[in-house]
Image 1 (cartoon, rainbow, N blue to C red):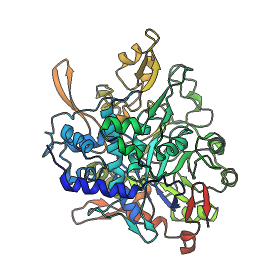
Image 2: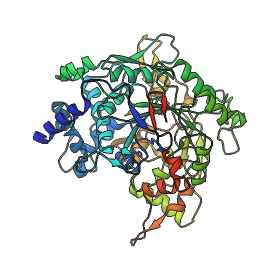
Image 3: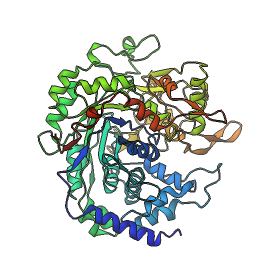
Length: 563
């Protein structure tokens, strides 16, 4: 048993003292100029978020799949001891200890041995799964907000800012993930890939120690389904009922939108408190950004009828047009002068300056940070990409794939040899759904019970659940592939006609259209490796920002500007 002893006790007491006895409802946060994109799985690592926060901007950790990230990192031996260092500060030592006892392997597991897996998420998760989600999100945020010696990140503007990014589409872990991040005093919550109407109210409730719910979309059902999180029940089952009385800081909430209409809808229908319904700003994301993109207006991918075929370009990508453009003057008027950031090909110093002059707060940048030294991307893969760009061998090509993601959203895929972007590699992958973050809940017509399916799972399984064969074509298991991108890919034994063979999950790199723009940052070390840092990116982006621009309107109170 790995004992956390005195360090754990002192860390827990310190956190409880910081949380205090009342909810921080009238919080103040500095409005950053640069928002570092939240790229999952773990591309937006705590190391990356911490470095951006050190530069006085908003560092963001990805919350997607971090429960699996935590348990696999522990099974790899927790190199550097970072997860154990964070767990030592968690306010419930026994909960942290349970995770260590179950998953930590001294020296790490053998490379040819599979990771021990978590159960997949369902609408009624086990206490164990909830605890891991809370612990994992706490660790990522706490590590991003602290130096190696445990001291908080400080900048010339005050405490370092750290946010957490979640995909709205990944519904089932949402409440538990956010609660864990709030225990670590996360400053911002940023969510896209869906319409997060209920999140502002959920944040209000959890900050006050109250129960809350989050709706779950169930295919072909008009009934209401939801997940429920009760701090009182959670801590009672954990054996620490008094913890439920501790009230938390309510983080700022920033939804990611792609249109004026969506922003307007959120401001009218969100469930939070205050004149802006608990919304504290917006990221406007354009379709050149990496990861999942909002589909073009009116576009619907239909693999069976193929009615979408006329809306694809010659490469097979969705076509975006004038209806998908955002009128910034109109947007600014609609959002009542709340802060907003532009995302999608805005990693240019002159564009940052332009957005500030137009009345925006700055930009969100993902791709440049994804390839920086501090990101969680596999070093070998990052070097492969940067070497190709530096040597001018070829412009890296990014394909907006309408079929790759089981969510149905267009998904950016980097054409990179040896990854699932290669049809040969994709065809050789034995289909399996073993993580299940993107599973779609549905009602089984035969039993009337709630089930879960994914278009990237084995075809026969998907069809047995009522899915169409055409719906599986081109679908990629993003959960396993994105985990492999950060050297946490699962290894498993696969049965073939020639006997059993070992298979390790292949990667699939998602990146923005302007991937080749990172060339401006590249430096070569004595060993011939190309790299750049997150600090390089921040300094470049702010190189045309005046001191006056960087200091004005720097604070806001829950939905209200403070001059």
